[in-house]
Length: 157
Image 1 (cartoon, one colour):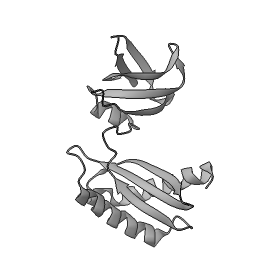
Image 2: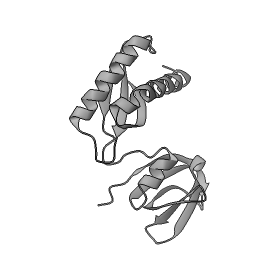
Image 3: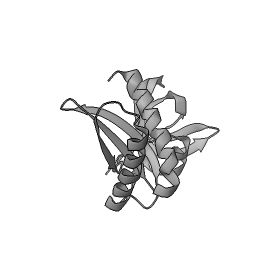
Image 4: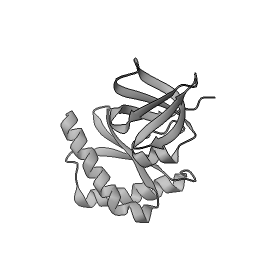
């Protein structure tokens, strides 16, 4: 599956998730598409403040699976998996960076900022729509969310 097709399919799954979000009672963290043994594997990561249980995953799998069967957005066969994002949860939206202020994060940027593209440190929070990160040496770095190619929680210990 080409990158453009993956992106379109991911957007469709995100839109379908929005339909069931209220009933599901969880937030969508990410949608990942992989190919495993020649078969499409669609992984939907969910979360909520108190954490995710197996029952949460089963409920979302049932709700989303039924809706996807009705709408049939993916022409080929696929395997649907619903999972917790785990300890190194990705951070995608501005709300994620606000919610996880005070936690350690790893960030990669598209281009070098202050001579580097990889950062690890304490997420101080958001200031004037810019992320504030305190590096391990105590120095603070500020960056626009659009400069971030990948961000995730970091289990420092």
